[in-house]
Length: 226
View 1 (cartoon, one colour):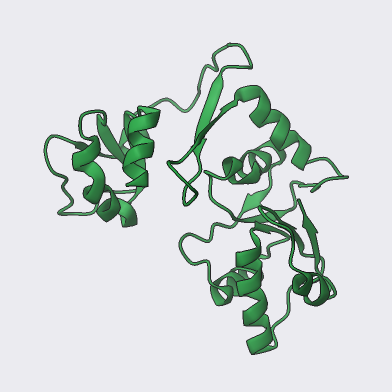
View 2 (tube, one colour):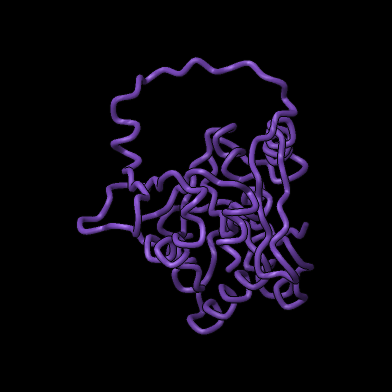
C-alpha cells in the first residue's frame, strides 16, 4: 500500500527496478498503471518476465546501449529539484522530502570534509542505509565526488553477510542505523569475530546504544553518531 501511495503521490512515470524485485512491482502495478509509462529493469530483463496490461519492460543496458559516450551537461538554477525521497514504515502515509541540486552537492561536499566523515578517493564505502533516507546519507554522491569505491550489500543486511563483505571488499567506512550495527555486534559476539583496524562507522537515525560504544569502539574501530 505504501509503495502504491508513493508512486501515485510523486506522480512517477518510470520505475527503475532490480530484476529481483519485479514480483513486488507486479503486486502494485494495477494500482499505478494509469501513471506509469514503463519499467526500467536494472540489468537484463529475465526471460519470461511480463507484467499485466500494456506496461513496458525495458532493459537498462539496452536503453543506454546506443547512446553516445559523452554528455552535454545542461545549465540550470542550482535550486532546481533533484530528488524526492519518501519515508516509509512511519505513522500515517509516507512523507516526501524534495532535495535540490544545491543541497545534494553541499551534503556530499560536507561528507568529504576532514572534520566530519572525511571520505577520500582511497576509501571503500559500505552504505547500509537506503536511498530514501536522505539519499543514503549522501554517500553515493560523496563517493562520486571524491572517487571513492562503493561496496553494495544488496538485500543481505544480516551481521554475518555484512562482516564477510567488510573484510572481502576492504571496507574503510560504513554507515547504518543502530539495528544494523546491533546485528553485526551479535555476529561478532557469536563468532569472536573482529573488524578491520581503522574501519570508520557512522550511526544515524537514532542515538547510538551504549553497548555499541563499549564493545565496538575499542575493536579498535571508531563509530560516530549523527
